[in-house]
Length: 101
Image (cartoon, rainbow, N blue to C red):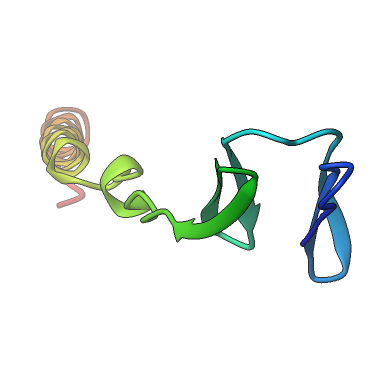
């Protein structure tokens, strides 16, 4: 990170790449950006012409809770449908083809 004392220009680098440029950043401000899967918040505070910096990693939201595709609401109707289909084939087979089984 580079923050010019006189100009106030701010450059934020991540892994050698520039991800944020702000000109004349002379007051308190927060920036958020991603590093891989982690959300990072950079807080810049100004007091009496002096700047302080704070990096705050944000807790990731649980993907498991959001993307539950195969939960009980999926399996119960599927099992019910399979039982109904098996019973239907069984009755059709014995009604129209009694000698097969």
